[in-house]
Image 1 (cartoon, rainbow, N blue to C red):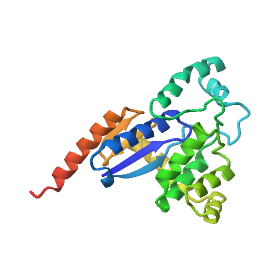
Image 2: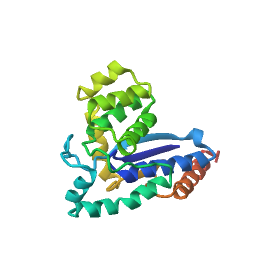
Image 3: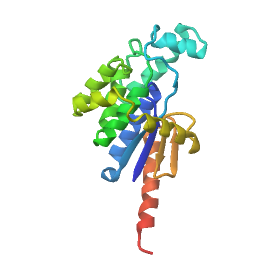
Length: 218
């Protein structure tokens, strides 16, 4: 069974959705049969690597609200994250461009480490307040999950996997991805948003029943 996830590392709901999907997979009776692949989706392709403003000020400018309103708006996000065991530090989160982080995710996939890499980048951004647009930060995150330092550094300093990121982003609208997180199970069952673990679990069971039925001898 294949699960594909479109997400962006700057999206707080994407990390929450990933956590809930993980909870559903843990409850699913056939989790060892699941192959999961993460795809790239940049919410703001033109975002600078370095902002002069903090997380809330960037949000206030983006949505045309005051900084205080941005802070208030995100309190519910912080509480939602807590409900799945994530303790967001949005006060100190560093807004940045996520393109290189997405390239690193594709690089890690080559070595069977994409799941660990995606988790490390999300955690670095939302919980550890690290600058995930900084190549040196990305390099250390990669080394921490077991990727080779020299190969990773060479990749980050090149244009490797740019095509993979752009290809994901070109594919997204063709299959109906207009917002993230967006999950597709077995190329058929699509789930939009950070749904509950129960919603993901139900979709997994439906996809499994259909898959096993099709495999039965006729």
